[in-house]
Amino acid sequence: MTAARSNKDRILQISRWLAVTFPTPYPTMVRCVKKIAAERGSSPMHKKMGDDGYCVSEGQKIIIRIAVRRGVTRALLIDAIIHEWAHAVLMDEDSDKIGRHDDAWGIMYARIYHRFIDDGGYRASEGY
Image 1 (cartoon, helix red, strand yellow):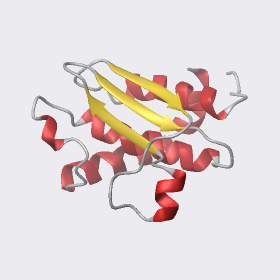
Image 2: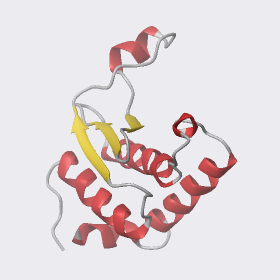
Image 3: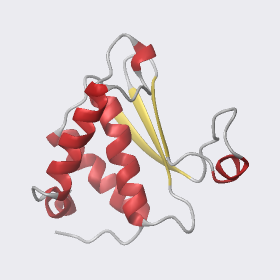
């Protein structure tokens, strides 16, 4: 097992583990970016900082963006990738479902979080 040196490396490592453990219906690409623009109507602070993660379907592929910026803790980044991966797992041809935080999303988020935190995923993912 190799310890990830940077937050970006760790997020990519976790995403490879997630792809095996919680497959998505379409190929999924994770990109680490510096900033994700906040949605309209967000608070001034949120606009300044931006979103932590974003998931979108582009045809029959899924792109997840995670904002790896200075001052953000690794724990927050891990939460962001788990949050966005839960959206990606539930993706289907009905793309208006993306971004919803309904019961199905909450259950999937909890399953992923539990497997990662409580069932050894944190350590297992270090090998990816």
